Length: 338
Image 1 (cartoon, one colour):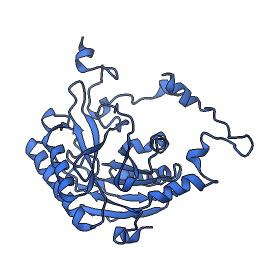
Image 2 (tube, rainbow, N blue to C red):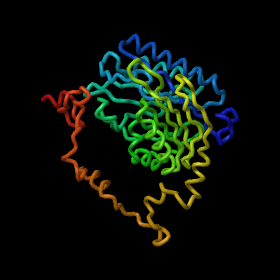
Image 3 (spheres, rainbow, N blue to C red):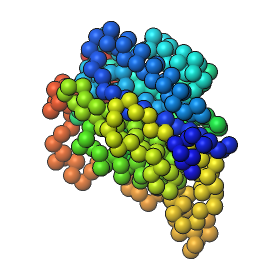
Image 4 (cartoon, helix red, strand yellow):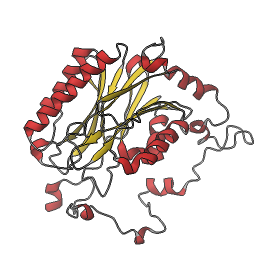
C-alpha cells in the first residue's frame, strides 16, 4: 500500500506529503512575508522530495504561529499576496497544495481558513474552521460547512482543522458527503499527542476513509508543537507516522482511494458509515432509517442543552485573556453595537 512512502507509485495511488513545518513567530508584516516565502520554498522542496507527489499539506498556523494575534495588519485576505504566492507555487511546481491562513473578517474576529489549491494554481477548496479550540482560540466560527471536492487523481477530498477532528460528527459529515481522503491540519502541542493519534485513527476507521493529519513542529521560544504527521488507512491502521519531531520533515505515503471505494461497497461487518442509517438490516428490510439520537434532534431544533449545561464553568475566552463577546453568531460588530 505505502510503496515506500510514494517512491513506487501505483497507477491508482495518490501520494501525499505532510510538512511538519517549523513553528514561526509572526508579529509584523515583514514576518508574514518571510514566512510566506518559507512555505513557498517548502512547496518546491516537496516536489523535489518525491517526484510523484500529488498533494503537499501544510499545518494550521503555518504563516501566523501560535500567538493568537488578531492584529489586522498581519491578517490575510483571499486576494492578498500570501494566497497569490501559494497559487504561483502550485503552478510552478505542478502540485496540489493545502495551506493555512488567518483570514481578515471586516464584521468580526478573523476566520481560521484552509485552502486547497490545484496544480494549475486554482483554489478548489475554501474552508473556515467550524470549531475553534475554545477558550484558547479567538477565531470566528466557520460558516462554509465542510466542502468536499474532486482532488488529485479524481479522489474525493475534504479538509478539517485541528480541534474539528475531536468531534466525530466532523469526519462523519465529510464521509457522508463522499470524502475518501480527509485532511486534518493542526498546531497542537505535546499534551494533545495521544488524543491526536487515536482520534485520527478513529476518524478513519469509523468512516472507511483515509485521513492525512499534520501539526506544526518545533519551538518558537514559547510554544512547542509536535509535528506528528500521520497518514491513516481506511481500516484505522497507520500507514506513515512522523514520530521524530524533526522540523520541516515531510512525511509521505501513497494512499488508494480506489480501495476506499471498494470497502464502502463490499464490506459487511463494520461498514459503519452505511449502517448508521440502516440499523439492524439483518432483522428488518433495509434497516431502520430513523434518528434515535436526541442530541441530533435538539441541535437541528436549536435546543441543544446538556444535562449539566448550567454547571459548565468555562463558557467564553476570558480565562485566556479575550474580552467577553457581546455579539451573537451571525451579527457583525456594527450590528452588535447598534
